[in-house]
Amino acid sequence: MSQPFVTAVSGSLTNARQRVISLYRDCQRAAPKIVTLYELDFPADVVRAKVREEFEKNRFVNDVGVLDILIFKGQAELRETMMKWKQTNHVYQYFYKDELDPKPTDFLSKFYDNRE
Image (cartoon, rainbow, N blue to C red; front, side):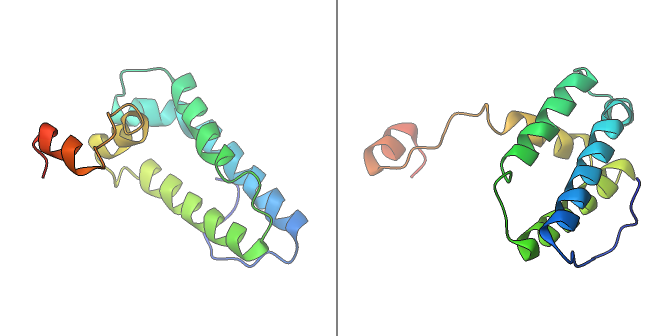
């Protein structure tokens, strides 16, 4: 990782964006090692696509304070993943949570689904 794992306060939006780009690059570079560490059954390109998707969720955040928090959380996730502090099922959770069927929301759907 290029930057130390610290809770830094970005002085400006430009500085925060530079830190986001640095974190993004670190995550992209770590993708092959993540596949190897956790013995995932898909290639590094899938991990890279998921990383991009996660970063795209917060693409339009312009508040420096919020960006600092997101950078800290991203650094923590990357650190925990690379230090293998997570189990394989925690890593798989990122990839399969979107594919699960949504839980029913209204009463009759819950009743018919036996999830009351």
